Image 1 (cartoon, rainbow, N blue to C red):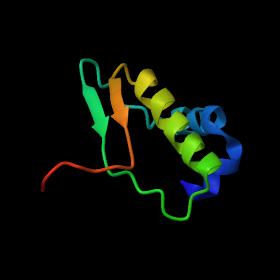
Image 2 (cartoon, one colour; image 1 turned 90 degrees about the vertical axis):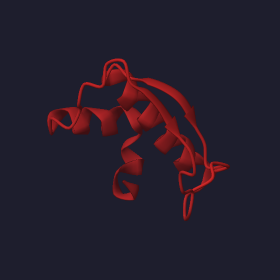
Image 3 (cartoon, rainbow, N blue to C red; image 1 turned 180 degrees about the vertical axis):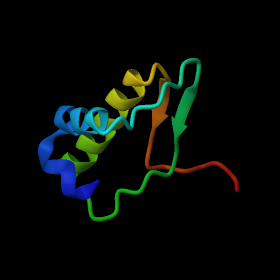
Image 4 (cartoon, rainbow, N blue to C red; image 1 turned 135 degrees about the vertical axis):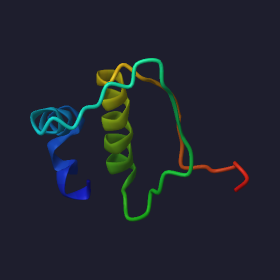
Length: 74
């Protein structure tokens, strides 16, 4: 994904769609916890977060949360 950050979230999603990598996830509720921000600038992190928000919208899933914090016990 780092190689595509310069495209921005919308163009990244267009590329994913053109490769037929969008899978319908109707009725899914997505929680992202502990996403790594290693080697990402704040701007790059926002691009990644926006991409996933748009991706899950395209899949008909509901993105509930997206965080780099992880407080879930494993």
